[in-house]
Length: 511
Image (cartoon, rainbow, N blue to C red; front, side, top):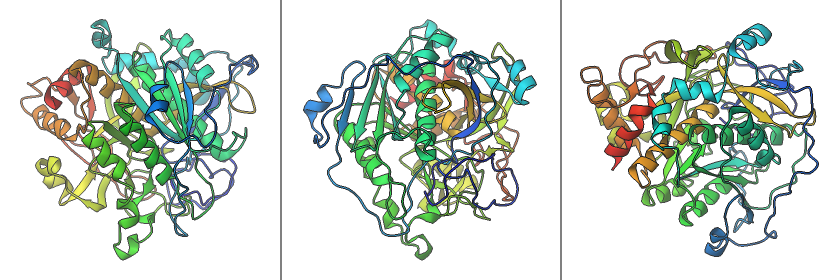
């Protein structure tokens, strides 16, 4: 999750579970949703020379249908925002706050096996091939359900300057087909500065988002939307992001929007006075998505039942949730911990993610009341919007492999975790369901809660594909969280999914 930019730059080891930690070297641009574990650097560097530069439209080009029509295979375009937005002093801005871990150099040109990771870094690591087995995606792929003719939109500040090359290396490693990757720069982006902590964090986020949305829905087109985000107090990044999303929606460019960013509800201006206009004024893109039947997802957060204060370095000593995850028009994606064998099969059932490095975000909104689709879980959420809605792999002690080459230190395979991982994985699942349905599913929350209720009848006699997560809690930072339990709960939502059953069920109920 991506809180306020008010923190120093640099790197430091991950924040441990325990009392809120003061700001220190390494907290800037390192974030709540995306947690960097280790960069396992290849012995041989991948040179940047020879990579084709992405073509861009001239700065100042206005949004138009004609530009949208020219976004073709592997296209890149620049769209300049209509106006700069400057928030009042103290406004929140979503930035990456990846808790950086020390770099571990193993001299290996390829990702390691799970056993090798346990030996080398004392952590489990998983490949996208293992996730495909764990989430039972094989039967869908065999039936030709790959996300074909669907588009996943990924929104990140700055993006990554090497994402095309990095995705190709990632695909080659795992034997995946190269997808159509379009890049849309909404606004005048600053030049990428290698080694800049904030840009580096966002580039990691974009890399994870693109590679894992593609890994789950290999036939889907990926549209990476890059937005400019100022890193000074008083300038918010949300307006650029929401304007970009609305533009993409209005120009019919995507079916599913994946958001791995957010800010604690409590940090929005006016919150202490119960004035929520600064947040509610940003919801127009989600309302537009609902009208245009575009699905919107957001990560639930990586700080368990609490969240970051406005300084971006201190945790609130009480329960708090983040927006846009808490928005009733958004599907909130929480995190689980998987224990997998090398072949991808489970050694034991999934549990709620909570480890030294973070925990799955979950709780009730202080701003939004209970939406009608949660009326059946009133006993859990009361009269408020509860999150998450569903959960996927996010644990750091079970992180995923990505490939990146934008770092000044050179190309590397790295292990990442957090609900930033869970959200693009679920975006891929939704894209598969879109293909099965033959159309966009739009706001999936009503269908998801219908399936959730059906999953509790006679041990899922209806074949919903929803799988209970019944162990663990999302306690973190000395703030007591919520316990997992059968049915809906504020630690895992409805649990996780078996995609072979869940995808057709979601497509059917949503239709």
